[in-house]
Length: 223
Image (cartoon, rainbow, N blue to C red; front, side, top):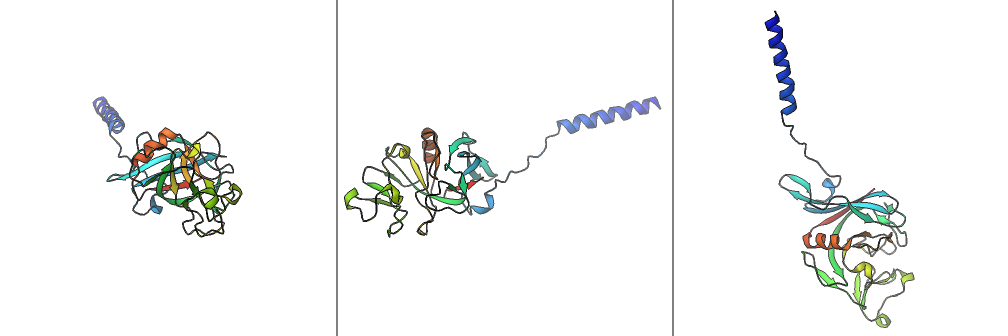
């Protein structure tokens, strides 16, 4: 009887030790945006953490599924002064929630490289915010006194030669260019403050991301 108990105890101990040592298969993690980005293989995921603060995670789809990119997790970001909005409109001071394309890049600095088209901007580059203009919510190049649209900031038009646009990537918000539904949404260099609706991160980190981005990349914004 005693020998049987010893054997039973030894067997039980072995079973416990075996269960602790056995590797558990890691469950594949599915990011919240995975079913909404179609065939995209690169995604910048922006999650609000309160007020005008957010974090950005950089994701790449691989043969093993979606994986975070090294150095691209929990990047501090600033968003709209009034947070995020599910229904964006001009002057809201909110960052639009949703899934958007990343169409092209621009900046006052020379092209840092990468797969997206890049435009180096100067004093004659504008983002047309005039809701009565046929080129509303597009980049335009013209002398201020010759532009065919309202160039005043009160009209929502921005001159693109500013420090915050040392580097920027255009978010495909309101691509239908519906008047009043918002425009000039970018991922751009931060000055440390809240934005008017864009997503802003450290310039050096943004340059690294821009060098990695390829056509078809998307940005996913949520609270």
